[in-house]
Image (cartoon, rainbow, N blue to C red):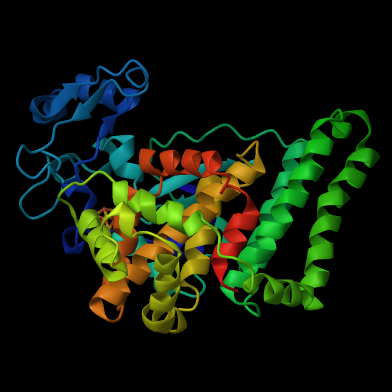
Length: 418
Ligand code: SF4
């Protein structure tokens, strides 16, 4: 079916490459959930039932079994989906069409979020096709409202309440995207400006939160409060145009390095060793830094990381100048930051930590290979999406940053090298 949705250009144009995909999602050892509606369909349709039954297993997880009563089995050796044919195609889709797929299979790599009364699509960088487009297409994140093909049995989230608090956060989202896409500044400068904006916006939202929702009591008061986030953003736009942040950045470049990079490197070192592509990326990074044991880590390692970045990653960043911008803006849309984050500082910490992690890994691999090409960068990005972007490992790292006092925007700013 077709539906009017807000979607970035890359989501509108996405086509799964299926058997041509370098590492398709069906080969991954992921849990493939069967949602309640699809489960009912599999029970009712006898032919479909005969095909899927030998491949289904009951979901015993108390937390998820109501929404997803079963999952598909994996192939014992490869760990891929047991319903994938040798030519890479899906047996269910081939014999019964897209309508017979479970929501997980039909929707991936799309992510749907309610944005006020609209629906917004973004996509996961864990898909190789998306990773490539995010790196290469300068206008991938151009947002447009219009008709998009959606899966027939798609159930959308209810629309979010559009109260004053929500509107302020919506303005902030728009402001952050504008700053992150302000290409007259280097991308580090844009992250720096956003990191200064977040604490101010947080204070503003807390003030607003402590007041009753003025939109219900007095619409004109709501207009005033609406202007306050707009006024804050306007103030920042003016300061950008006046070059105010350049002076601040110059002063910061002479400051002591933050311990944030060290905590991140330490964390990468303790990543659970599995025999997969992501551990190879990790191993290359640590070898490039000459840091394979925790004892090797010190501020010289951080300096070495910066030097390797200038030598090996910067040429790639110059060739694909909008890659990091697209990736970070995409994370904003995926998590609907700052709308879905009660505490702005936590949401921003999540995004900036992911950025530093990805930048470190790309630097390490670029240094190991003595250069970075599109194919390798794409490979690193989708494995990053599959292994780290929303993982328990990332959550643990974020907690560690809080515990070590490295969770403030100031620590991130000192890692930027402006
Ligand atoms: S990972 Fe992406 S391109 Fe590859 S098979 Fe899955 S959806 Fe298609």
